[in-house]
Length: 252
Image (cartoon, rainbow, N blue to C red; front, side, top):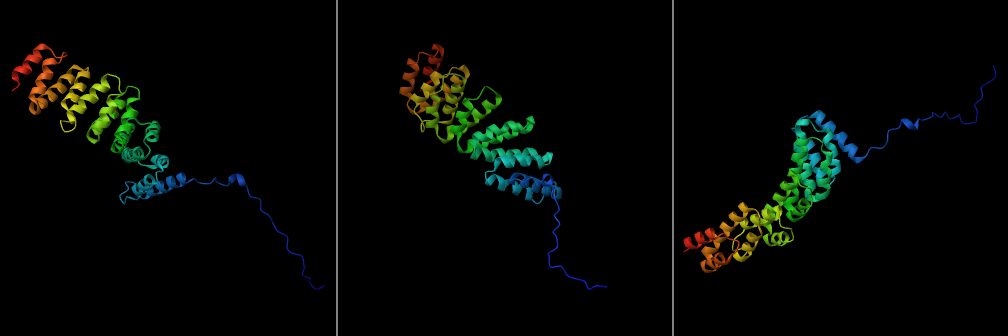
């Protein structure tokens, strides 16, 4: 048998073709967060250890609110409403207009209602003026009324002078009436003069709000300067004679 020989040539390389179409697409950070949250809830469905909630909090702290909203797909039904409230409250504090637009993505009416109120609270906590300007330009609806009332209530406490200036830019109507009456109920002589308050009263069209506001201001004015208050009552042409006589006869 002839001796064996060793070839000096390198062995041939075997190439295995790879089907690139089967390679999964790259995972985005949002998809990774969603997968991680699903794992957390799979291990702890009621989130007793708080790890899922901490993931949500960190996502909100990073201002990744679109990602936070996407996480809702992995949240158990009984936790969804609370999670949405947290997301939209934080979102509205940081990016209020984006938060309001994103509400359209919440399909369940009850969940949307809770998320909307949370967004209003978040926006109102830092910028009631901005919320008021947003609401006044929205179409008439219960949501608009809720947002506007919330904003005016807080604004009247935070900066009544700025609110009064803003109210004077509004056309006379229901919004002005509500805002002026609210201003009067939340302020006193330490914040504005009786004369200024009566100017607001005179411009209120709603009879009930006008009467309530007038009663408050005139009672306050009679205590601090009864002479000036009586002079106003005597000369106010918008007052009914019966009301004028009743006030003047009862005044000290």
